[in-house]
Every structure is written in C-alpha cells, then in structure tokens.
Image (cartoon, rainbow, N blue to C red):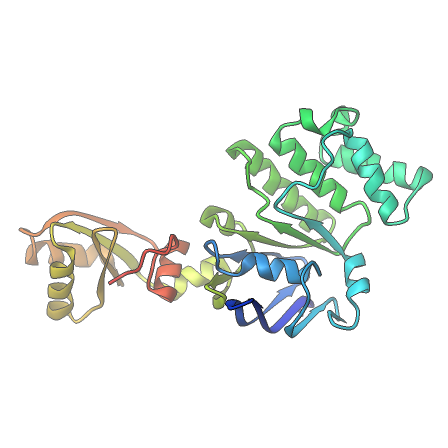
Length: 311
C-alpha cells in the first residue's frame, strides 16, 4: 500500500484581498514525482512556499511523513531539500565552497561533509568543475549544483519550484534524467511546480491548479482518458455560427477557441466525414488528435491554459 509522504487538507491562503488558495486537498505518496501544474496565478507557488515552510500555514492542515506542519515545522525542515525558482547560489564562490557552506548550516563538517560533497559532485557529473566559480557555469550546470546542494543532508522529500526555468532543451532532458535517478536509486520523493505541459507529462501524478482551485489530480494518462475519444478542431470563417449548427444538428457540445470550433467525441475519425459532408461549404480545415493535458485543462476549466476563455 502506498504511504503518504505529504498530505494537504483544505489549504487556504490569501494576500490581503486576493485569494491565492481556495481549500485545496491532495496527497503525495512516497517515491512519486508529483507535479503542481497551473498557469501563472494558479496557486502553485503559494502551495510550494507553504510546503517549504517559507510561508505560514494559516488555514488547513499539512503533514509531511506524518509530521503535522503546525506542531513540527522544525522537524519537517530536516526532511526537506528545497530548490527555489530564483537561484540561491553565491556566484562569487566556487561550486565546492557553495556546497561546503550549505553543509555547515546543517551541522556537517570535516571528512563527513567533504565525502558527501564528493559523492554529489560525482553523481551530478560536475566534479571536474568543483573549483570553478559558479558565475562561470551554464544555467544547466548551476541547476545541477542547486539540486546537489539541496541533497547534502539526505532529505526524504525534494521540493523544486519551476526547475526548468532558464534551461535549454538539452539541459531539461538531463535534469529529468537526474530526477528519475533520484526517485529510483535514492528513493527520494519529489514534488515540483511547473507551468510547462510537456514537463507535467513526465510526472507520475499531477495536481492541476487554476485560480487557487484544485481542478484535477491524477496521473497524466488517467486525466487524458477522462476526456475519452478524440478532439476535433475545425477551421471556419464564422466559428460561433458553425459551433451552434453542429450542436443543434448532432446534439453534442461544440465550443469555440482560437478561432476554431472544438469537439470532443468518440471515434473522431469516423465522425469527420459526416461533419465534412454536412458543412463542406463552411469548413476550411479540420484536425483530429488524442486528448492532451491542454485538453484536460480546457475540459475542466472552460478555457485554454493561457487563460483564453471558450465560448
């Protein structure tokens, strides 16, 4: 049976008059890579900051490996490795100096600390750059140093806020290779925030946040299966007019977005010829695809991930 690593129950948070979280609840199980996915302003960074104890817990309950956040914040911090979105490395120090000073904060020193630093530098393939100043490293290498630093004290839970920010595609691939190795080899539970749909696809499960509300929580594949069937997108000169006619004629929901008419249906490849025959004079283009996470977001919220509302 899966053991909860993190339990979040009825979490709320506000900044003055702005509500950031509206009573969200979810569970992260041990040895998962769990993603908080949402557009800007969705509430994922606020959730991250409360989980990392950077923000106070005002309303709701959180436990980390059985430790209640309200009563055992200090104990929870010892279980966490945290990588914030903004770089926290001292760029005027070398890679080793950054790790060494971080180790001192956790009470490590001497040969124990130096051995741990060596292990991590080799694990993250940055041993050859150990004496280089951080400011001379690429963004991808700096991110590796950040993660290595967060693992010095052997945490059980690794929290990463938008870990791919500023990384090129190659560095992102390597980052995810490292995260999967930490999960499978070190049995570290990982929770990350992201606004990248392709990154969320790599998580074992995701929680989708929109305007402070949890709209879905499951594996990416299960969420896409909830939509079922296919997604048909139709180009036309008057999308609102055609959507209304399709809805009236076939009794199905046809919506408009991005100047297109959008339909969710089973066996879309069989339905397309019927559509084209019925509205051949109005259809300028038509595409068929399997549901994506963007389609899941549209299905759950009624608008695109970039906040464009559907009609």
